[in-house]
Length: 187
Image (cartoon, rainbow, N blue to C red; front, side):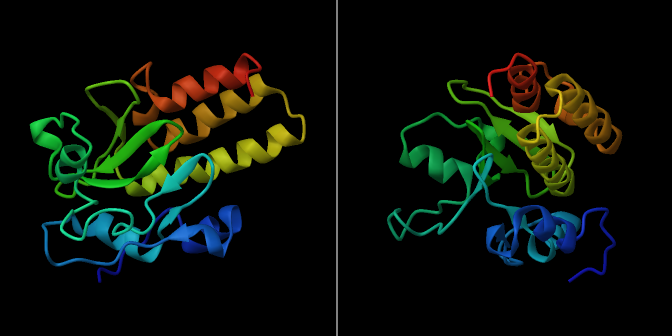
């Protein structure tokens, strides 16, 4: 395992989501996986919540011969077209209604919005995704405490955008759509 210092720590993730809501990925030597991302996913992990549903037991309810992690196999199982370049990407979970996957070679994180045949680059890496999810958890708590939605949206964009501007580049990104719903009182 690489000895890497991350901006997001396991402590921050468990403080935001609780120990029972963190999913770790095992380090795997079976595929080429960008080392920093592999280390992050196995040592810090991903949260599991209503907003971001991490992949759970990848073998159930799928047939034993199905590789439920790789997008190509998963999309084939459901009879859905999968862009050729993304067939080897790994599913991380769902952000709201978008399937979220990582390209194991580059470490970039992509979203496949529901009802779309394509994908959007969502984060530069898994650490950026988790950073945004921790900040979103703070936003949810403050929203529950009646903090102004426009103030919350502006803070989220400012803080997350300073860490990684990628989540807000595409106007149809799940982050932009969710913040728009927040600002318009749809929560």
